[in-house]
Image (cartoon, rainbow over all chains, first blue to last red):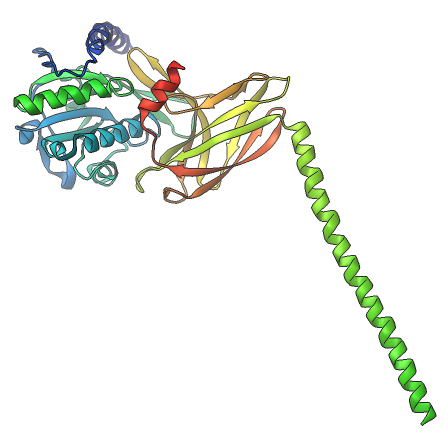
Length: 202
Length: 182
C-alpha cells in the first residue's frame, strides 16, 4: 500500500514536470525544423521479448528513429487511436518511414503474449513491432522512459484494466531519448522532430 | 341433354361463386397487409412521440482480428424536455457491452466503467474517442471495415432504440482535436 502511494506521488511529481516540458515543447509548432532536446536522464537501452519469442533490443534499431509507445491490446480506445495515428504519421513520412521504427511495449504481460502482439501490432502498419517481458523487466523499461502504469480492478467483465501514460517517446538514431509527445495533440510536432532527426542524421 | 345443361349451369354458378369467394379472400389478404403497414407507421409515430433520443454518426472501430475488444461511438441527441440516461447496450457482436469513460489521472489515461451516460434535455452527448464509449468485449467475429453492426440501446425514458453502426478505421485525431476546441 505504502509502495503504491509512493509510486503515485512520484509519478505525479514526474508527470507534472513532464507536462510542463510538454507544454513548453508544444509552443514550437512552426514549420521550421528545430533540434529536439536531449533528455540525458531518460531512456537508454533495453531488451524485451519480440515476435517469435526472440529477444529484441533497442540497439537493434541504431540508425533508425524509434518511436516507443506503452499500451495494451485489451485497450479499445486510447491504444488503437495512437497506433492508428502512428500509421498516419508513417504514411505522411512517405519513403522516409523506412528509417522509422515504431515499438509498442505491452504493459499487460498477463494478457499480451508475444504471439498475440505479433498478430495485433502489425495490423496497424506491417513494420510496427510489439514487445513484452516479465513484469519486472517491463517495470524497469517503463521507469527508464518515465512512463507509468497501474493495474486496476474494476467493476467490469474485463476484471482489470490498465491505467497508463499516453505518450509517444522519440528516440534518435543513436538510441538517445529526444522527447515525449501526447499522442492526441502533439503529433504534428512529433512529425517535424522526426523529420529533423532524419535530415540531420541524429 | 337438358340435365347436362342444368349441371353445367349449376357448375358454372358454383365456380363463379367460388372464384368470387377467392377474390374476396385475396382482397382480405390484401387488406391484412395494409393494416400491418399501418401498424408499423403507427409504431414509428409512437416511437417518435415517446422517444426523444436521436442518434447520429454511429461507428465501430475496426481492430486487428486477434483483438478481444473494440469500441463504438455515436452522438446521442435529446430532443425532449426531460433529461435521459443511456443505461445499457446489447449487441450480437460482443458478449459484453459496457459503457466506459476515459480520464487522465496522475498523468495516466484511465478507462473505467460507468453506470449510465446522462443526456440532458435539449443537449447532445457525444460518445467519442478518448471519452465516453461503448466498450465491446469478447467479440463474436472479426470487425471488417464497411460492415454494419446492430446495437440495442436502452434509455431510462426513451426505452429501446436500435442503432446500425458501420465499422470504420479510426479517424485521425487531428479532426477530433479541432472538434474539442470548437
